[in-house]
Image 1 (spheres, one colour):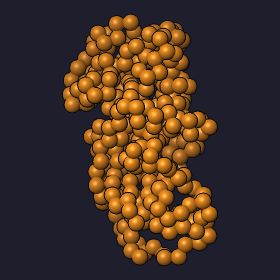
Image 2 (cartoon, rainbow, N blue to C red; image 1 turned 135 degrees about the horizontal axis):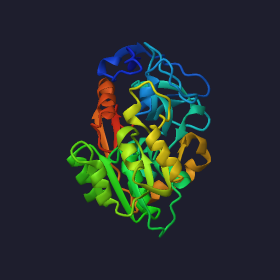
Image 3 (cartoon, helix red, strand yellow; image 1 turned 90 degrees about the vertical axis):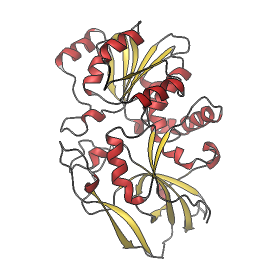
Length: 351
């Protein structure tokens, strides 16, 4: 059968901004034969995430992420339905997910590399497994649990940058659920600020494109900052760190402001900010969620429970069509999304 796929057409260069033309859609022939242990799946949803920017370079700069290859199919987080199976534990009609799902309408995969998901955990919203009840949600939850040192009733103030994104929008809510008395978000539009405070329970929100961040932070965090969930790096983070308290903690989730630059990860702090960090004994350790696989299952169950109880509100921005993968990626890299950026490839979940 003929299927569509998206391949890497060109690289933006280590210091370049990704553009839609870096990706190319093409048709290929997919065999009807599947081998023992394999499954044929139809793709339902695909994820675009900031870490993928590193995969567009010839060298990702990390040992745990491989680069995408030119003219080869691109891959990332995905979810789909099994149409045919020769795997003992997977049957036709099962919903499955993978961190390395090809950007392709239908695909033959090794069943051992797939994880079966239960639609009841997300009340049927399968795309949530790529967001708040998937990797971004786990990153937020485990990051805060492992690096935030928050205890119930400890009266701590938490600041979240990139607060309206996939991780940030979840992290702020988790901060409250785990015991922070005050949560402040930083984001880039008025619409996002309103959403954070009116729907997601943030106590205050700062628009870094329009407001003086340092001034607004002092106003919003009169007792200083105890926990900083850092999604962006760069100038915003320097401003937050300069208002952090002694023995406070930075949860290093991402550094999207630095991803189009050829710098190491995590990018080093400027000498002045590093001096503040050391002087105030602020922890800033690299956090990699893949090192905590033993916490994934209980984490997903916890996130699902909060969602079902109405304590965790989930936001996503959905674009339709495989042909729009490049546009979705570019939009996400420039803050065009609210919550998780998802691309819907096929909504038909019956066989």
